Length: 293
Image 1 (cartoon, rainbow, N blue to C red):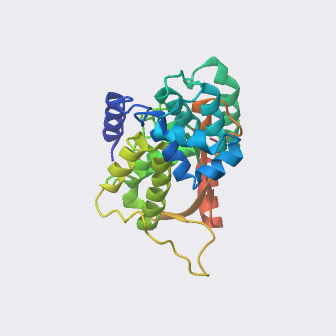
Image 2: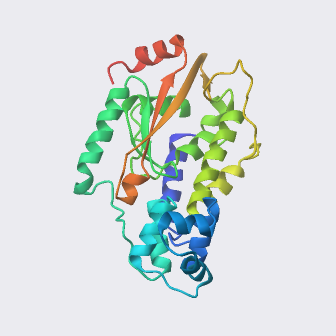
């Protein structure tokens, strides 16, 4: 995938915009049934933990009763519904969203951006990047940018967008993108599909995550979502990411960091992915290449 392909992917993302709506349920009754079932709750258990009568819950799920705003928020907390979907539940019942979704450039997110920037800089000389819930790229450190340009054959002066228009998973799993340099691409692809499947299940039917899962699964030679990982006792305790290009082989693993107790949809969905070397040779390569970045 060349630089012009990267720009094309960004433009395509912008053209699509937010075509898929955030309200994935036609009514509150459907949303409540979905989340209760997904969390494995019986009406009795939900009644006990939410202190709402089972009879009233039954009426809510059948559409015979309408919830109050406070009750929707209470049930959302008990069922651990993501903030975006709590807003969707409110909308399906005719209420305004409770949780704001801000732009990353919003002044009220300045402290969050400073914290993320600090963590990105601390990760150098190893790569780190910030993505949203669908792995759209919003921030990265210089080693991450350098590694991306190296893998894609981009010139050093090329610009990488920070506006969420680049999807990291598509870039990685596309046969013409990073995947051609992934030695263990089948295992990496299988783990990635499983992660997005969880996002799709969390978002509910008709969501952007569901569409992304379908798009990733449609790439050539993709493994099934139900791929069983290597459970050999001698296997590493993490999924390694083995990259080979220009005679260089790098062995990495990643960690995912989220921000605690957010009250904003945007903040709730941000993830910091940090790359760590799995051996000393890989560590030395990054130190030699990105020590001063």
